[in-house]
Amino acid sequence: MDILLAGQITIQKIDENGNILTIGEFLAPDIIGAKLIFSKRNHYPLNVSSQSDALILHVNKEMILNLSRTNGEFLNALLEMISDRATVLTDKINQISLKSIRQKIVDFLNYESCAQNSDVIKLNTSKRNLAERFGIQRSSLSRELSKMKADGLLEYDSRTITKKY
Image 1 (cartoon, rainbow, N blue to C red):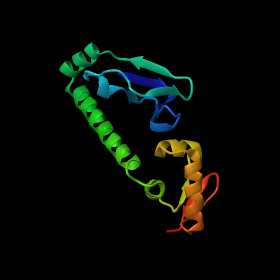
Image 2: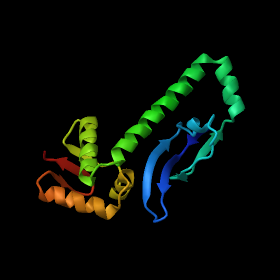
Image 3: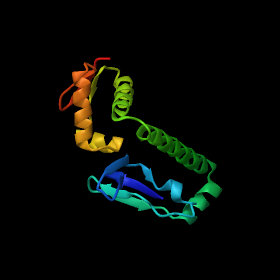
């Protein structure tokens, strides 16, 4: 298990065609790889890239076992974090599978509208990163945004998307 002490990293799946799906973005003091601690397949099957200078503390399995035996709060927090991450991955799978590009955009906009308490959604990421988050090509995202604009569902510029539905 690794603890990101400083910096930012991104976990991505890159297929043989160079398509990128962003699985997660982590900032200090996030924990990475906890779900692999006790797995028989304890290698990381994805690409990890640093978005800035990063400092990572590696905690081995024996230390985690010792902490778990002697500190119930640590064990509870570890299990809670692993469970929460499993839920996030399930949500991610639901987000990217069997949905049209339009539905992925609508789901994203609805979530961000609620989180930002506004129909004018401020984009905190580039459209390239947003496309990677959806597991699609940037050109496909741009094409669908243009169609949705033509259909009167939204307005957008480089920094915001305004819901019209």
